[in-house]
Image 1 (cartoon, rainbow, N blue to C red):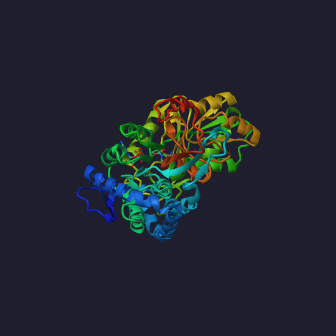
Image 2 (image 1 turned 90 degrees about the vertical axis):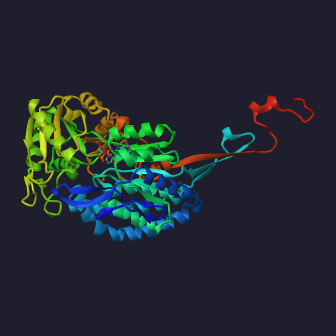
Image 3 (image 1 turned 135 degrees about the vertical axis):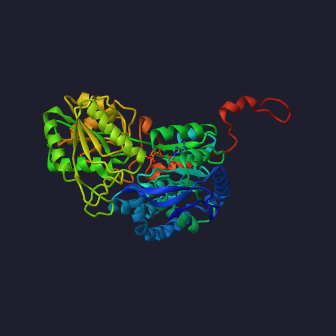
Length: 503
Ligand code: NAD
């Protein structure tokens, strides 16, 4: 399968191509993407610029109708494209089916927000608006938007940014992730064909080339970015030159705090494992470190060891597998290094899981699930996002210590607190510096669509989900009428008359 650009209503030809490989068998080329260069980005931005006004003026109700019609088409495409996601990302097929269905689901969800997307508030009756003003505040689209997405859940995370931009009235230029551009580009081509030309444009390519050119472009008014912290910093820098809006959904190093008031049941262990190892540890808000109260630390570690033994690592198309390989060569090398470093630091590195016969262990980026105990609290595996199925577990003695460890990081995306006592859990949860704190859960799906999702500290800027996603794609336009002849106080001293005198 090839992924090409789509500009101004037409698929483009690729001049230079990069290969996409199968992480479950790295000798297998799954497809290619055409590497968009600065000239193609320029053409795509101009097409988005030309299409913007018409799309904005269509009105949110008409946009919603087109999005709903497109959702029906993309829903039909999803089963066909889910296997491609497994081939490029290495996710087990069930996770890819969920990802592929995200395109239609998100178009429908945001079509349902049409009223909010063009909300108009009348502030005339506010005491602060009187006397002499009648004010309206309109939500208006910001202009052409750049969407830049990561490979770990490529379709869902791309449409999580495309859908709010479209309902807001923005045209988009999308830069899909280079490790997994195939399925999402096919979805975007179909969407682009169903909307007016230039409303959706696609520039497959690298972050350093196409991504950089997009974020720098003066006609792009907002960048919606999901990816790692290091890339997020670069996006902020290149967007600064033209003072554009930027929404950043970045990495996380989510702590899970198992409090003294929690009973260590199978259900609790099962949730911790699902929250840590889904997608081979490659979800932004997976649990990245567990802190357990010392009174039950041994029980938690033993329970995790016993239960993770049943985690099956296999080929993504093996229906018995819970996890496939990690996605990129860089991620694979880093995972092996983190394990070697942990051993060198004197930690206990426990290999767990079950290798299915379907996994081509020596041909793919397969990493066994691991539990690591006895790490220093400032080890890289503890303070940085590992994005691999390697889970550090550490003890704590007091709630104060648990909160301090949870917050001793520059990340602040997700987090969780585990307890039988909801009041105790919430007291601790309120002290955590993170965009989301879940209580007694932390698996994918814990963050529901109406609740704001995003990061504190270096995990990001802005919030996603529902109405919160509209904030980045829109501006507030205030229209203020003068009512009657009463003039605003501050201007009174300049009340001149045509006789050339002050009143
Ligand atoms: P990445 O930052 O390497 O790449 C993300 C996207 O940014 C890609 O499309 C890439 O080409 C592009 N990019 C890279 N450098 C760029 C630049 N200088 N200018 C413009 N674009 C550039 O991230 P990744 O490896 O694809 O994804 C994994 C990371 O994403 C993890 O840190 C994960 O936690 C994070 N993530 C966050 C969320 C969230 O909602 N907060 C969701 C998923 C993933």
